[in-house]
Image (cartoon, rainbow, N blue to C red; front, side):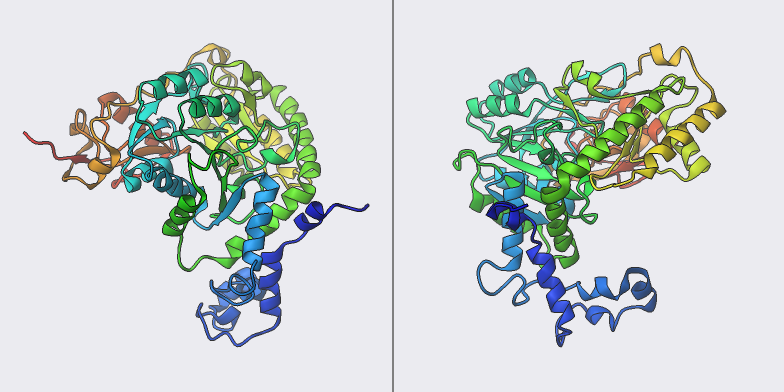
Length: 498
């Protein structure tokens, strides 16, 4: 079958090929890193990851790879990524989607200090507010009192927030969520553009959406201006690699040069060629084989959902979720299981699954557990393995007929934002006992993990209810990101005058 020039280009992996060519030439490596392509590596490291991987660990500014004749293989790889996702420009990130959020915040700060932010943003968005000195107006997503989770932002909520913040210079939303809920990004983009601000979408969990027509529309196609894409999560590049995509919207809203400067400011001067090569290869696989791979994966997961739904006491989240407020569509590559009908919480079930069959989940909460599946999993043996283990676990813990009908007490309301995150993070601070922290202004984030969404932000007043909620999460087996004291015996707070 003959293919057009664009399709033929997508079959290339220019950056990966250039690295391979360099390694195969066996050049004199009179440059870093000190392992010299493997010859100087620790023997155990060499045995663990192999001489081939170490040979591809090549520094930046190497002729014929990322400097030399224009376009270099690295530049061409990023251009191919932009074509694949339909972006005006794409940047490879070597510090994960977190780096994309940091760069987005710095890019927005060129326009002014005020920004509208979805409150259940990832903790890296809050880090961006601190670094960029932005003053957020937080807007609450739709909360699901039945499942005890947060969904996406409605266009009405965004409209109210932007109308109430006429000085806003951008709107920052999340889609899909950890649980697979997808926002109506097209409607959110229309709201943002009516207010002459760019729409930034943290699409960390949606890098695969562009490659199958049965999946929800991806953010760039829906009109988003800047999209953070955690390519490693589903598409399959190496951990810590990601991309940042600039849309085709109004250059005046967010400019390419400004984004480029922000990416440069937040990246290492020694970027990992292995991470970059994995992005190049993952892009090629997605562009050339993504539709086929995704179609197979969706079918296997469809059958797996039926199998899990047949287990007494369990249910699954699926396209029915789109009928709930704040959910426009559902991403079927997230396998989320509703555990309210069994006599165990999601925390307890996660521990039991590890004991029964060494099954390690992406996320577990009180009412829901989440298994993540990659786009390129050709046989998906773990799907059947999970279903078997769930059946065995339910037989052990039993069914709770009243549990499925009960509503879960959602996390307490977010506290009052008394100062900007940057002011609180950099201001005068002291450490107090957790039991004495209620009413004080937090100087650090408290983000229960999973899923890493802050319950408390720097600059928010702490409440006894929130502190108790976070402590319960720790007791049940979760952890807290951002806290200086990971056991939450003490908390860092702002020193207030008087």
